[in-house]
Image 1: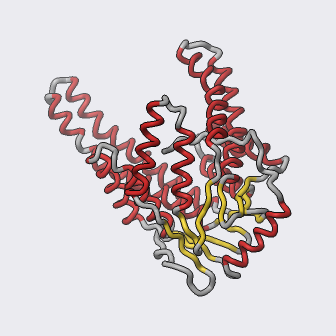
Image 2 (image 1 turned 90 degrees about the vertical axis):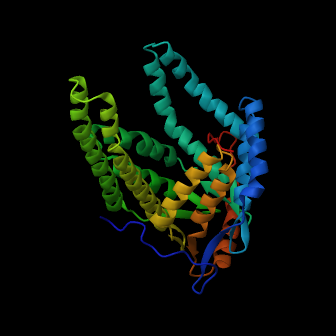
Length: 361
């Protein structure tokens, strides 16, 4: 099995060699009033308020995140998010209506949606990066002519080939999507990059695929005799249901492996990102993350969802405070260079048609 989330904890603060740890200053107590007002207003307005809710939430979490003594900024305008969602709704609604009517024209709408997908991805990435800043410098996504072509190759062409190859190309397609996103992202005018990790993506996706195949085989092996015995009245239905309880440990094992693979993929991507000489390292470990998932799920269950602000802040704190930035020349030196580049670069990314379609409180 490949090296899975077996790293040490991130540094606690600025360290020799230019290492800086993130700090998260948010709390459930502070976030709860924002969340509950967002939720109530979104319900009362039948969802129309959700873009304003998202901006309030994202601004809180960005401004609660500190790196080397400076906080992040979030500058989205709710109206831009609302326009983006209306555009996506206008694309999706005809398909939803036609599929409900069982019309053959639904396939035409589905094809249009598929063709619009990469365009939406590019617009959403441009929006999300452009509205994020650190020390007054905005992030951005490339406006080069070849970007849209790359989006169609990586988000439409490669997944289609993955299907034709019975899934053999899916890990490569997933890798290329993240590689393309990193390669076209900027901080100021400083380009981001990602070291290739195709082999690791295949190893991790292979583990997940083998797990699902083994799970399916076990389900068939357990369920087939139970179904046959019940159909032949050899065992009462209650006994058959009791036999199904044998599947519970299998479900737990699949969830554990999926969590492990997902965390390992995330760590792989993060630790291969670079921004000029700046790199990242992650101290996420399976044990604490598993406890975080289980305890957060129990909190949500016991409180009927009202613990969501505390759950979200706990997750953000763990993920951020176990993430370290390494800047050999010092972060102040790097940011100063990015600021001077950004002033020459200008705000050419500020296009009206960049959209955001995410939903969140």
